[in-house]
Length: 108
Image 1 (tube, rainbow, N blue to C red):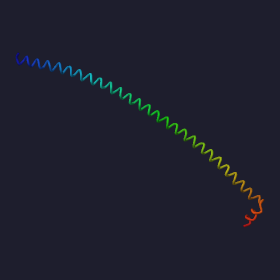
Image 2: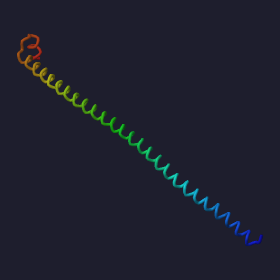
Image 3: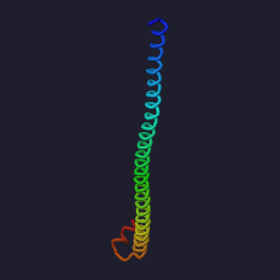
Image 4: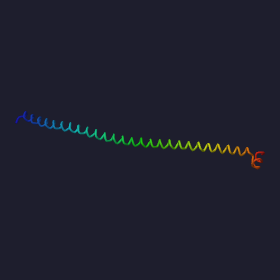
């Protein structure tokens, strides 16, 4: 066997190993991209679901808060009307001057 045959044998071995290595490298890269895309899509789906849950909870809080504010404003309005009626009734009672004690207080 000559040096030339040895070099050819080594080059043939390197070429076959290198070719197989290139094919393995290409397949692993391709498979890695597919897995990465699948993982990314599942993470995006999970994020979408979580975002929808957060939107739902915020909408529920907003609705509850608006309802509470509206009811509170209605109660304050009723209370104000009752307090005004009470003031007018007290003023009318004072103006009627029915009780002698009230006359005494009014004179002083």
